Image 1: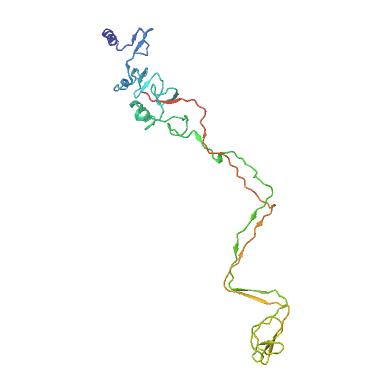
Image 2 (image 1 turned 45 degrees about the vertical axis):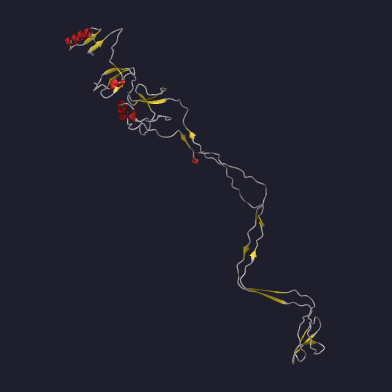
Length: 319
């Protein structure tokens, strides 16, 4: 190592203000150092990712080979850049990889603080402060919303307003001409206070009126029509009776067929119950029937997600 270093230091110190060529005597005018070879290359320092990110105050343009990612990295003055990926922080891609790889972080909604310090800084610079977006069952789209937001749904439920304009018609079941029977309930009339009922009895043919009266001509009683004043106590069912008075006499005769007036008094308020008879409607009367037609639906959500290829989504945050 020392044998190789001394001649190199000699050349550099001798031609500090001149161009240096290794493997060539005519280096390119734009290069301070040009290395040419047809069977060898330049070997950069080989570091793990942890060693690379632990370099204190790396200079802009510093190159190292990362043995974890198997790629050449350089520091751009703020962040480490993977030259193999040729990606910029914040780039997004889909892939069949199952997990993080080469600085590409799976968008699975994980917390930002679970990432490396360098990845956390990049994620925060992209606007992710708490969690990464969860791209599961989501489709990327450019709109006026917040970058990284996962919005909307893959299903929708139609309402009646979303259905096509249509008229459902149907015919009600019928049994031909028919009628409807109505039987109202009994009702009571209102009361009208005390009142009488008047009428005339039917006549009953020839008949007489009897009496149990005693006395005679001098006793103002009832006697036989022959004038005898014999005191009697009997019912006379037929014949002429004389009522002797002084000086007048009253005779009650059989008057043949006749009527008797009847007056029935009823004291107190009362009501009359009226039973309204049932009635039957006409079979020819015009009427309508309401028909309800069920749509048979159950308001199940409709899957609006298109046919898709299952992949994972990644964002490039570096190591």
